[in-house]
Length: 168
Image 1: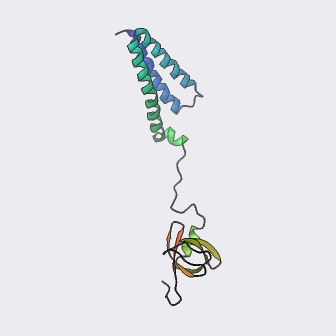
Image 2 (image 1 turned 90 degrees about the vertical axis):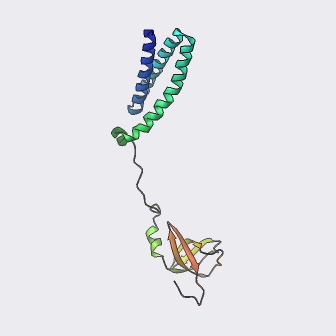
């Protein structure tokens, strides 16, 4: 085996190491230039040996560079360094982005009046607080009395109360 081919393979390995280093170390692109120089040097040596070796080197470079980059980016968030430089997603509960969630929970079982026709979504008034609600069953006319029967996330479900019907 020609020692130049061993050196070209070494340049490819060096390029792989430098790609990983580029992901972990901010170098302003300097390491990327070194990667390009290593790959170019390796390709020149491969093509000087033979055209087949040169094209094999091109294929290896085309597969190696994206594969190493993807692997490095998958490993980065799991390292101590990666945990320090990336933001952790906020831990949130269902419905915590809505400031009125606590007030909506207080409306469970409350009775109110339909302000806009519910088809099946409309606005209801509960003691002066207008809230968007979903009707339990289809269309509800404006002015009907309703009661909150369920709350899912920030969505209130209401049931029509007939005049002679007892509240749940």
